[in-house]
Image 1 (tube, one colour):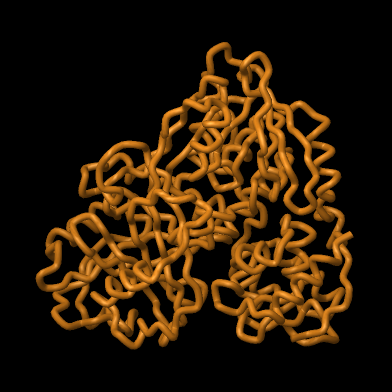
Image 2: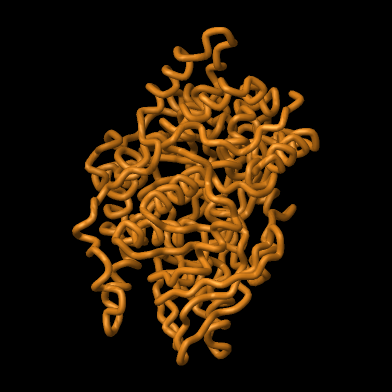
Length: 536
């Protein structure tokens, strides 16, 4: 590992100076009265803060942990229409999901999303026949206006050329359709940047210790900065509870008698090294309702997911031995044994889906968004799909505009008058960015490695040039964090100065892929901690 010199916080160019210090942000939050305080830095809260700031409201966003630190960075990494919803006749829902998927992957964040071909294997004795799945993927592609090609059926031999570890015993046919995938943590962070660019003030690692009330109405929150113990408060005309699995915990702060509004479902995933290249993903039916995924992602293989009711503390959610066994057993329906060796597992993670309260199998429950208003006037939003994060933000804003008495309506621009597909920061063609990074390297120094250039282009878009500039100015930052990963030390300094990274886990788990690759070694952590400590 390289020996890092001290690299204090510094802006890479005038348009992208370093973030204000935490003390400055706390002071700013304490002094102003905000129109909207969003509690919860998952994608629902982030999207709402982004849309609210765009509408002209004065917005604050806080989270007890890191942005996207829980479920929002523990998804299946998919932007998808929801093939399984066709079984329940939810045609309109699938079409709406496809619209949002295409908008994000083609116009809002093409630098952070990429198309992915899916193979749906049809085995003898399986829950669905080839004719049914062939018709299903055709209808699915039709609802996407055939923007990803026409859903069709191919032979097992052709599928195995793209997925070399595909089991072909008793394989009758393979249905084909298209969706998209992303790095969910990077997408969330870029949306935080968009919210800040629109005027929002944000702070992570700031936990709510209590709500503020004025004449029985919730008018803010008291907080504690977990990095140094500083206590402060935020005053707001309206508070939005977007705390995901903790939504009922905050509702009970507002009203100790509040009845539970949600139930939780755990989804676990495994990340494995790939034994051979994959050019398509597998979506294998397990039963009538469930599908198990095997996704080529970040040069690795992502397997999952489980779907079981969870009743414990959301902070304690973790992948169990039973989860690991289930995921590997279900993957073995369609994947050869050599790809499923436990020795290939580099990481495992679990997240909690927030579902509407009520009885029934969690795997059959709709992933719908629920917005409620408490007795103290606090709004709570929960549920929904990653794919529709922009739609959820607009939905909450329309709810704010329609509140009794219209407390915020006069100060906000209606959603239908705002840009429908405003891009996220860094929007650019990643192929063009990667090419420029390779061609425009420092004259006296070594060229950037192709895998690093590609990694920067697909995780930062045009903002990758700021990281390259940092690496040029500080040659030690141009070195890899770990020899087996594409990340360079300039990304750590950039995460510190521009992406609200406070801890080693913030950097290694969410701003980079080092933890997921199984490369967050003690030496790497020590180097990251040292660089984080150099902030001014």
